[in-house]
Image (cartoon, rainbow, N blue to C red; front, side):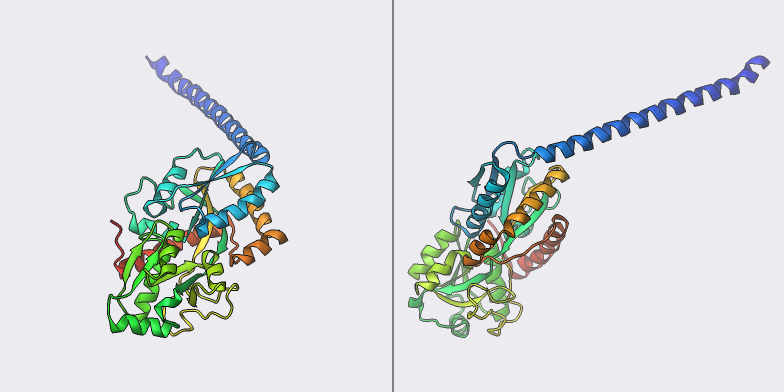
Amino acid sequence: MFESLIQWPQRTQRNSNRVRRAFALYLCELCALCGCLVSSSIVSAQTWPTKSLRVVVPFTAASATDTTARVVVERLSTQLGQTFVVENRPGAGGTIGVGVVAKAEPDGYTILVHSSSFTVTPSTYPDTSYNTQRDFAGVIPLANLPNVLVIAPSRGLRSVKELVAAAKAKPGSLTYASAGAGSATQLNAERFRLGAGFDAVHIPFKGTPEALTEILTGRVDYYFCPVISVLQFIKEGRLLALAAGSSKRSSALPDVMTTLEAGIANSDYNFWVGMMVPAKTPRAIVDKLYQQTLKALQAPDLKERMTKIGAEPMLMTPQEFDAYIKMEIGTNAALVKAAGIKVN
């Protein structure tokens, strides 16, 4: 027994040495595995894309978001030598299309092009199957598209001052359109309404084309419409542009003042369109998609096309875009609460 006690520390030391050797071997294998994964990711990014890509737009065709997406991916298709298939999946404030991308394989072949409504739905649709911040990675904003307050000439209102006066004279008598309950176009209208201090009735539509039909006929009074969708109607005189809803004037309509300049405090709202992918998409692919999209946006021919449709630069890195999205989710939550916006 005494001899066993003497040998016990020696056996313990030998066991400890074996454990250390095994742990060291495990670390080596783990490092090798990580190295392989990193190497595989780099190789994947170098060869990506090797097949056609799907671009999900959660709004109707010919909407501002859809038009912007198609202009940009046409250029990307040329650069990358692959087909980009735009798939419109409208409905439920854009959450249907977003849900499709959230469930997609995070391999870089399914891309979401959304508007600033992306940062509104966490407040208006809190029970979605996805988490806006956790399940998506920002790639790059494609453009800032100033909203323009438009009205049919037949309504007889020629300025912001006249519109506000009419709304205050008969509270709740005026109607305004939006591209859907809780959409960025509704939030712009609510910023304006709260700033001016009047009541109006919200008429939501499936998308911008449907909303514009009712505005053109005068059946709905006014609409904060993305300039990209309404520019031609303004030039033809079929609609009047009373003011830009953005923080600064639209370069496409430099003579149209902003609602801020018209004297309505805290009425500005910036409408943007951006590109996102599922959060687990390899970072190397996200970075390559960002670089290629940035290259496309800076190409002279694309810049000219974007300028013609009233789209203005809003360049950010993926990290900056993620931070901006997080900030705007908080800002929009406060606006949704103040305006009492509810989505049935």
